[in-house]
Length: 164
Image (cartoon, rainbow, N blue to C red; front, side, top):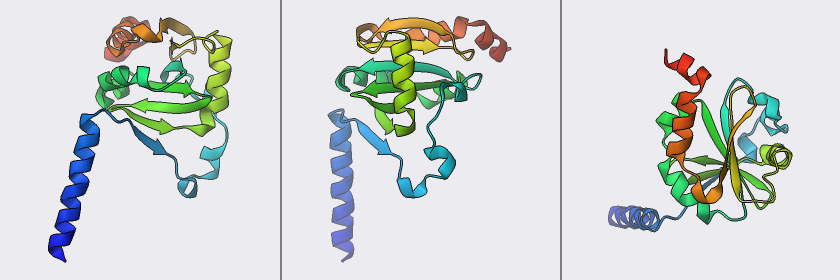
């Protein structure tokens, strides 16, 4: 019995490693049984003001985002108060390091509204929104680079104040 359990564990580890090697994107979905009433309410854009800088992305499909997602790391996202969301086929996802995409259904309408407002809905593009809610930059998806986004954030007056 122990041998069977060990064999199963090794097999699962091998599958996980092989999926990582071929760049399969991980997905997380909020479990409705563990969601409180407050978190199921639709979020508003104002919920992020002065709390998070945002990168909002519109993409027809997920694959163009994979190279960008490999650049992400938790430390720099946290340090810069940055959250990255993508609207893919009318569904919102939070993009996380290691190519993990966390489904965020409470943001579907908010992202659609914001991307439409900034004329991003009809193109594969991204916008960087500062803590104050203003758009700081627009990027075509083809040239989206986390390094460029970090460099721009680091020149912003609010970020400079955070570094002091």
